[in-house]
Image 1 (tube, rainbow, N blue to C red):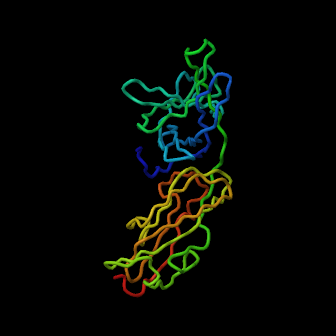
Image 2: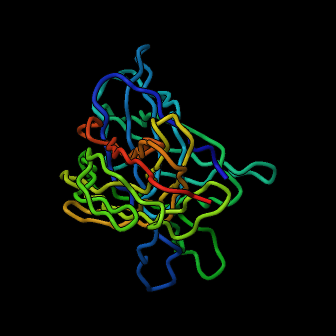
Image 3: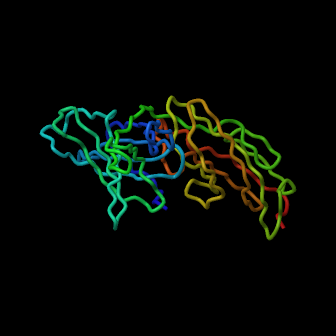
Length: 280
């Protein structure tokens, strides 16, 4: 699997786009829509532009791909994002892809970033017969970028833990008798909550984490969060292990920070619980 890690904070504006991956085109046919990919381009403190590729359909993630100017006399020219392409440049010994973003100055000027592909990832490349007859060479086609603005993930009210339904931020007693199971000092409680995409853009594939006492605390549960269109909601449920006494259950939306959001301030919610009774 590829590395899934927290993305560094970058300077300047981050632009988020959705990139439809197209499959093989049969003679006389049309290209079916397959996975949808995201592309964000940002600039670091040194002025280097970098790309991050993700997916709305699964854990496809390549972060901070350096973009270098090729055939450019004016690399500050505007990006022609609608003409960006992602190509398979693999060799017999190495699987690689290349992202090319043309600039408005023309003359073949483009920002280019090449990166290695994990064994299980297939680059979103669209090919079709080049007109020289069956079995002849394939011509690579450009892929259209669909603009999708940053969005805002939120935890909806309420949250349920055991048989209790509460608002985020509440404190309450949680009887050990409500646990789904009790053994060796551990109470296993069922939980459920809902994530809402409250922003104007499509959120990419990511995950939410439930942890103990702080976002850096022991992981209690991890819930996959697929792409959500604006206004869409998705429920998550499972079980977490708690011991008798006071604990704080912390929810962090978009825990790996895969989603470009207008605000990260509402990504962390908490409830304080006091498990009463024995977990034996």
